[in-house]
Length: 502
Image (cartoon, rainbow, N blue to C red; front, side, top):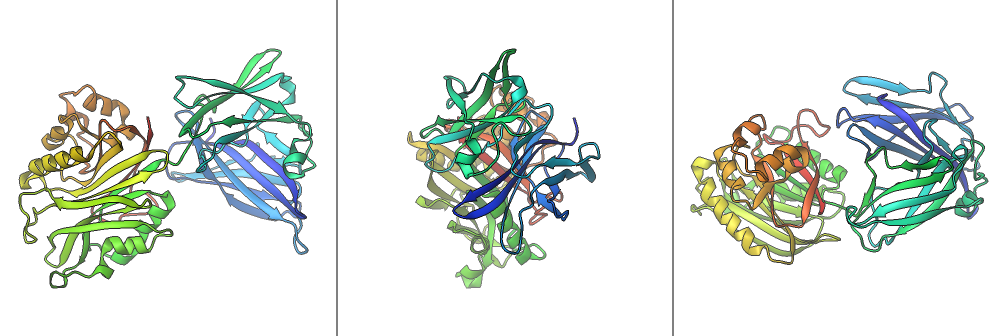
């Protein structure tokens, strides 16, 4: 396939409350050959002034494709007219490649207030897909564009809220005055391109996740829009956890790097952040709260995060070195304690762990431990056993998940890592999200070949989850590398994993 390809565009002039505006939407299919990419729409109205509009990721399709979407609205005023007819091309920058879809050098055109334009090979399409359900949302709207040439007889949604264990079918309906009733638009249904709109809604109640495909009965049989074979999935807000070792004030341009970390937390909308090597000046043992690294990061975030922190020992001969948790959700419980035999601030193997409990909407109670344990020769095994016992004691029947996050100072696949595997209790969630086959071999089949399977891994930072938890890792990303937009901020990289209920 092409690296970038047009999928659909919407051009509607709305007339609500004496306010006239033109809403433009552009959707495209992008080949997923790298995570970091720039996707844009360049468009011009009847004034022939070209604009660049950034697109955002909407959803994954099959294994190698994604849908991206760009939207803009232009309000008519005494000084500005509406764009009217729109000409546009698509652009993608990825791995140094510059790729265009300009409709074979003819560009694409969308007439003013024409409704929907579909890619030529697409007979029907969900044009209002939203991957994220709003808090308290109990109904999910469906808007389907269908080519009149397929002679649609009946449009319906085949859907589930329990991963297809049970299914439901909900009809969609054709309304001749759809655009007029929705936004006081003059767009016809079907429009001048002979594309009609069918709509319906799913009664989802308090479901966390909804999966669906759209069917259309025609004289030649039933045709489907199933998101290019993957089905559509919309869900409540997932739980995003990030772990990062801050390197205890040892970084050049340290203040700027605190800002980089805060920007990443904001951009990625992380829920819980576990930090290690959280430094603040020693200050004769009393510290300096205003210079605490976790506090500085927290204070630079766009929204308020709760902070729980404690310190373990003197770091680099001049800092109180500790651990912390930042959370967008309020703390129901907090705790802290040594898991090491050494418990003096003058011993680098004195290792304290902090714990918080939060209530995550649509997920439930979650226990999170932020840990920085010693390397194996410094007492990792005994420290992990104490941490495991503590976490298991807190993991009651009302707990949705328990997480052990942080710098464990054990290399993936090493003997110490294998000791975690063979507890058969705590499992590596970054591995679960990024290498499911390897994860299953190690944590389900208990392969004796662990060291070989993870020989090229190199991680010592982890997010472990209690196996009896009711959540699953669905996606993960390594952050603060030489290759992402946030750059290096520490001698460690960060790991961000998203979770949702089974």
